[in-house]
Every structure is written in structure tokens, then in C-alpha cells.
Length: 173
Image (cartoon, rainbow, N blue to C red; front, side):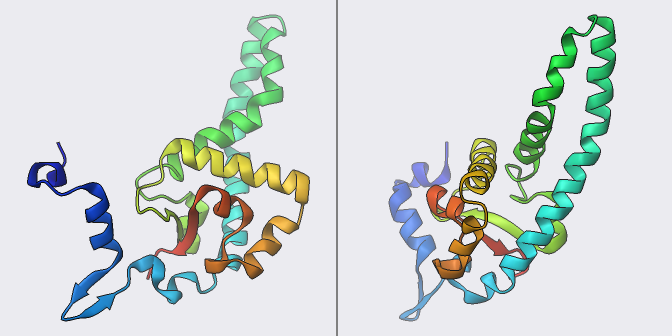
């Protein structure tokens, strides 16, 4: 049982208190309202993507060896898994890192950024995977326009961020 349920406060009331804390008549903004949270996020995202791409490539090696061995044991039937191996490894990587407690992949942590939801809830594994699938689908359909959106959107959000109600922020602010 959550503490809020025990003391009788509704989650909506708690969210309002989190979004705007009042101290001596002055409203203190949350971390997502601080403009410093978005300084350099665009370039950090690009470098984080490159780091994560390398990590997924390295993770593919042991999985590919397993599929190779399984294919030898099944007279080639398991080799059909090579077609879905890259998306499966990438989805597992994203589920466990971006959907984990730090809400950032290894590349994002190296670049000092994280993924946040605008409603204040933590990013779960499913949201993380959908975020990545929308990123790849957007890149396939719209190529550079996915990133161009971040030049005009609030909080430097990309198209898939806008669709999911997420935002990438600096983790050091």
C-alpha cells in the first residue's frame, strides 16, 4: 500500500504538489521545468546513440554464436533466428537499461542524460521499447525530420518523445 493511500491523499493531489511546490508564496519549479536540464541535450543524444549502437553490436556477437550453434544442432532450422536477432538484442538492451531504475542506456549515462516521463512516473520497460521502436519507425519513414522536430519543439523533444509524453534531460541538473 502506498503512503499516499494510507494518509488519504489522491495521486492527482500529490502530483499537483510535486509539480508546483509552494514555499513562502513562491512557486518552485520541478527539474523538468528548469531550462538548464535541456542544455546540450541534442548533441548528447547523438553521441549516446553511437555508443549504444556499438554496445548492441558487441552484444550481438555472443547471441549470434548461440544461434550458430543452435543452427548446427537443428540442421539449420535455428538459423532463421538471425533475421530477428538484432531487433531482439536491441529490445532486451533497451528494456533493461532505459526501462531500468536509472532510466538511461549505457550511452545515455556516459553522456549524462536520461529519459523522463512528463507525468512524473518512472519509465518502464515497455515504454522504453516503444520509444525505441517509434524512433526507428520515424527514421525509416521520415529520415532526418525526426531530429528536425527537436529544433522547433519545446524542451528539444523529438517526434517519438512528443508521441509518448517523454523528454530527455540532463541527469546532472
